[in-house]
Image 1 (cartoon, rainbow, N blue to C red):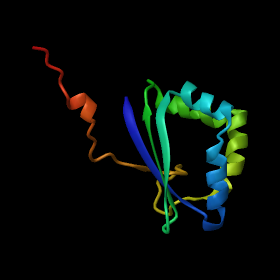
Image 2: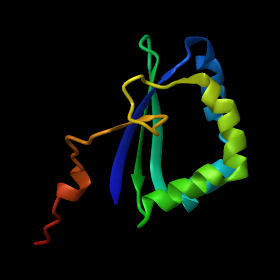
Image 3: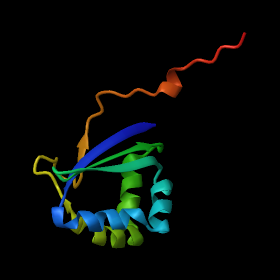
Image 4: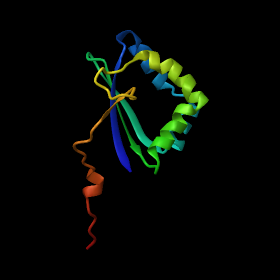
Length: 119
């Protein structure tokens, strides 16, 4: 499992639309996310900076292939036709990125660090 984080700007005039879209994500998109081995996907909004922060866990074995499958899916391309106009990519992102990927520098999972002892 690999945890991933990413960031992108959101157009201030499109925040309400972006929230509306994500309040009712299409079932086909939810299914595709799962079929591409992504779990625990969350997007946060930070105002007034108008930044979106996304985080998820990747549970597959071929990230590039799964992302290519996601990008090629016709329903996802339709979904992106609504979401992409809401977004404003960071100028500092790497070539080929839309959302700027982030480096994980700390993670703590309390449930994994607890040990059960029986007496």
